[in-house]
Amino acid sequence: MDVNEFRRRGKEVVDAIADYYENLDNVPPLSAVSPGYLYKIMPNEAPEDPESFEDIQADIKTKIMPGMTHWQSGNFFAWFPSNSSFPAILGDMYSSMFNIVGFNWICSPAATELETVVMDWLGKLVGLDKRYMGIKDDGTEGTGGGVIQGTASEAHIVVMIAGREKALERLKAQGLSEDDADKMRYKFVAYFSDQTHSAGQKAANIIGCKTHTVPTGDDLRLTKQALRAAIAADKAAGLIPFFVCGTFGTTNTTAIDDLPGIAEVAESEHMWNHVDAAYAGAALVCPEFRPLAAGIERADSFNFNAHKWMLTNFDCSALWVADSTHLVNALSIHREYFPPAEDSTSFVKNYRDWQLPLGRRFRALKLWFVLRMYGASGIRAHIREHVRQAKWLEEKLLADGRFEILAPAVFGLVVFRLKASAISKSDKDADLESLNKANTDLVTYCNEDGRLFMLSTQLKGVVAVRVAIGSSFGTQKNVDLVLDVLKESASKVIAEF
Image 1 (cartoon, helix red, strand yellow):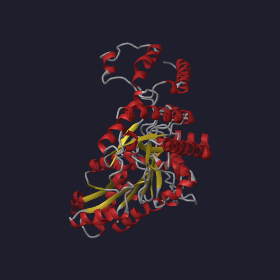
Image 2 (cartoon, helix red, strand yellow; image 1 turned 45 degrees about the vertical axis):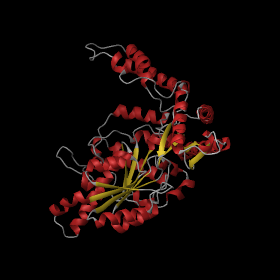
Image 3 (cartoon, helix red, strand yellow; image 1 turned 120 degrees about the horizontal axis):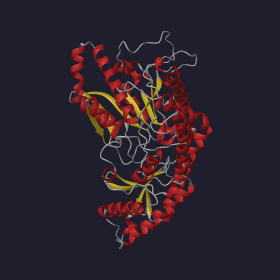
Image 4 (cartoon, helix red, strand yellow; image 1 turned 60 degrees about the vertical axis):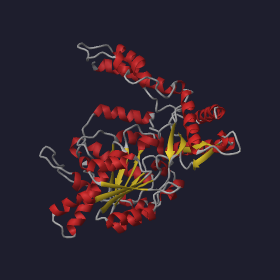
């Protein structure tokens, strides 16, 4: 393909992408293929000779498209959104054009410096404390800073490594030799609640530390009291608390942990305090949500996924640390083929030392496009509209009389179930087993309808239905459809009991 054909084919692809988004609500959001479908219809080997662009385009439509679950559909309500937007797509196109491997400043100065700039922009936009900024008001380098990770899972790993480094340095400051301090690693314990995202446990598995899952109460929040009790038990057993994760917006219900209380405990126990706001952190662009996040200013690190609810195509997970020292010390490795910049300034950051891989894409470009083409006002309007839709759906479900809300809709997530009284054929409410089956069936019927996709979850043994509103391209019409399908499916379920 030469440049002239690329120019022509590129325009065709842009048209195909635009057509896809224009017609997305007319396609079932959930793929209906069976496992192995593609293997059966694809050749067993790569082609020996070049194939035409037309043939490849035809295979996109007939072979790839049937196996796609359409995350960008306005009728996708299953997991938290993975937002895309046209500005972010354009930014990604430029990133693909440059195709850099940006492990240090000299690889492409603009890539490093733009990331520093936009992460400070974004941090200020969500109301982060100045200690998280990479550049101080006077233009000098700050001790903290932001970096774009691939996912919140990667962010979890790198800050847990930083927390381990901090704990080891503290042991050595107490007089232990480096070897003796290193031998204590097997006693390190990280703390999560029973509602913390699985990324926490995965990070612990990777770095090889112990974990303590702290039970939550009826409100599904990690509290200061529960954390203190868990730490006391572990310290009595000779273990060393070193890391705790508080969550701003859990996956199951968007519960918000006791962030000020967790910060108090972390400070007194010299633990690394990480706040995972992967989904709900985007809401902090709206000042009215910031009081809910009191305590994040005391954390050692804070993370949210701009690729979830902030119009930026995957992958773009924003991580800030208040002090990058331990992170860089833990992840920095020098080789002679990593030449330093001749003039080291505030903007010369080796982001390879802030992440797991060496190489990194120019992800700051798509975030830059989004921040500029939507502006703060556009992003706030995007978030607020989804919150309004979620509260509207919550009100309509309550008004129906057959549903009950299991967690208040604070952001874009509605968590509910059919009532026990709704499925009962007598004066006595249905038992939990019957109620759980009814709500499992409710989700099954909704998805079998084919017009939308949602999920159930479990809250301490209770089956709940989740409707996650947040598509970049969704409208009130899509939420109207959810309500209609839920009502129709509820009638079917009730008729069977």
